[in-house]
Length: 224
Image 1 (tube, rainbow, N blue to C red):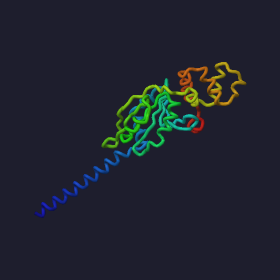
Image 2: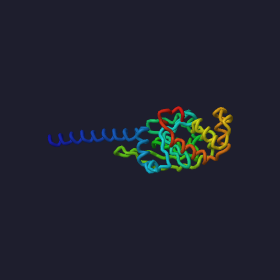
Image 3: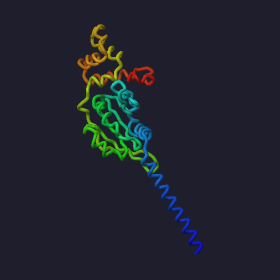
Image 4: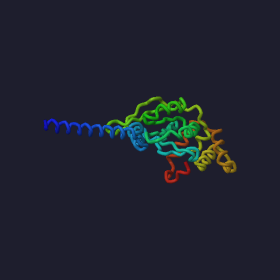
């Protein structure tokens, strides 16, 4: 009887320990962070793009002269932004962010923890892609495409062109034949002049080319 009692006690303590470990594991699994998802996104979905010499993958790209930032931007034939919403994030700023992304990004994908997916689908425009980020039992992040991103129909070419620095816009306009006097106009007018002359595809190609040439760019984020 004593042996049974001790054995039962051990079993109860063991079960209690397992339940505690299970609760801890579930808590940790739910608490994904921005850095967890970002690291996995680079490793599992963007790594092959970074190996391509004509594609830029940039963290924390400033938009609309730093009014907002997109977590990751892929710049190729279009500019595709990835906004991360981890389990520890809220969606309080999402509508405001989307208002800027709608003007400045040709494609947008929101990478969201499971708890946010329903709300993101309800609030994001239909052209916006959604990827669910789930944390597995060993802590790794798994991605599932809920909705593929489509081309943004509301892009504002002038706002997109703001990714170029003033000196870069002046350089482009000079190559297009604009006189030095015209290049001294206010910055906003320079962007408008550029968009009157170049197509959206040509502006995107120019952005990619200039970004690849910039020296010490990430030390001067105010320019982006």
